[in-house]
Length: 107
Image 1 (cartoon, rainbow, N blue to C red):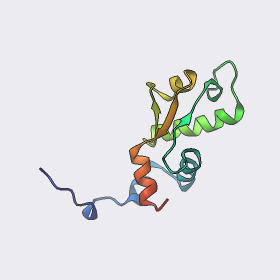
Image 2: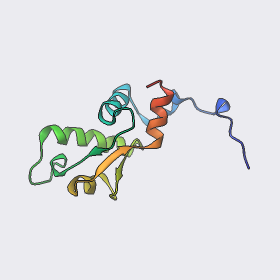
Image 3: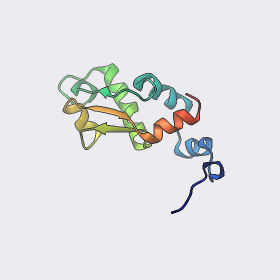
Image 4: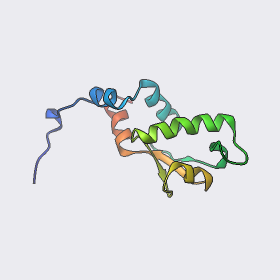
């Protein structure tokens, strides 16, 4: 078994978030939406722009969530992707990776 000493990691959290293009605004957005990682965000068709009844505010939130999905910070729950989570009124949540970044940054 290989032991991993986190104090000797090759990259700092700051280097990782810089490499992934994660901004402080991204982290603050996550914390606002998911209340420090403890909550799932319930989605519905109004979040998807192509639905029959899109809500402009929800569409903007959903666009940000999708960008964060591509960075590995948000994931759909009980759905293959964010689109289907919204269309089928499922939910999304912060990934473990996102929670660890928030924790490492002191949030």
